[in-house]
Image (tube, helix red, strand yellow):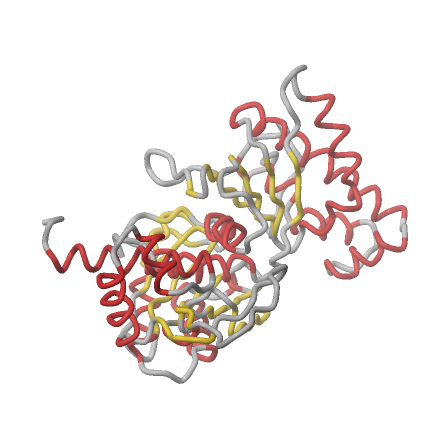
Length: 388
C-alpha cells in the first residue's frame, strides 16, 4: 500500500505543504533539498499543488535581516492563502465564537456573540452556533472550505458526542451530528474539548517551543486543561486527560453555583469571581472587576488574592505530577493573573518540594476567542497530516 505511486505522491505533497507552511516560501531548488527529491519530482509535486490551488508562484523577496539582492528576483513557491479555509466554533457558557483561518493559518474572519447557552436546549444552542459559523465563512467554492471543528467544555468521545458537558447541562449530546444537520451545506465536522483546542491554538500562534512539556488552563466559567509534549496533545487512555478543573482543592468547600464544591474550577472560574464580587457589593461584570483591580480597589484585590491562592494549590499538584516547563493561562478570567503573579510565584516556591523547578507561567495572547481559533487550527492540522 505504501509503495503505491499515488500514495507516495500524496505523502510527498503533504511534506511539501508542511515545509512551505513552516518556511513561508522557498524556491523549487530549496524545496527539493528539503524534501530530499530531485528537481523533476519536486516540479511535478509543485505542478499538482498549483493545479489544486494550494500553492502559488511569487517573486522572491528578501527576508528580514537579509541584504537586498541585485538582478532579477527569483520565483518562490508559497502557500496560496485562499487555497483553503478552516473554521473553529466555540460553544461557551455565556458566549459563542467563530474563527476562520486560511491556508497559512492567518485569521481572516472572527465573530463572538453573548449567549446564555445553559438556558437553551442543545438543539437551539447548536443551531445558533451553526448560524454564526455560516456568517463568517468566505464566499468561495465549497471545496475550499476544508472543515469545521466545534469546541466546548465537555467530555467528548471519538464520534463527537458530548458525554458530559456539566457547565452547559448536557449529557450524551450528538454535537457533530447536530451541527452537521444545521449547516447550510455538507462539510466535514469534528468536535474537540475547548482546552485541547486552546492548547493547539497557542502552539500555532508561534510563541511556544514545540519541544516543551506544557500544561494549559482555559479559565472561563469552569476550568479546562490540556497537556502537550513535543507539540502534540497527550490525551490519555480514553481521550479525557487534562480535566484539571475537577481537581479537589478544598474539602467541604464553598457552595458552587455550578459544578462540585471544592473543585478547582468552582474556586477560580468566572462564576466564583463574579459571584463573590457581587456578594461584596460589586457589579457582576468581569470588565468592571478587572478595572477595579487596575484602580487598586481593596475589595477586588482581596478576591484576586484568594483566586491566586487557589490557583497556586491547583498548579502545585499539576507540577508535582507532570513536571512541565511551561504553564499557559488563557480564557476570559486569565487577565487576573498579572495582578497576582508575584503571589502565585511565592506560593509555588513554598508548595513545591525542594529541587523541583517552578515552571514558567505565561498569559495567553490569543484573547477570548482562543479556543475557537485553536479549533480552526485543529482542522488545519488534520489537513496538513498524512492521515487526513
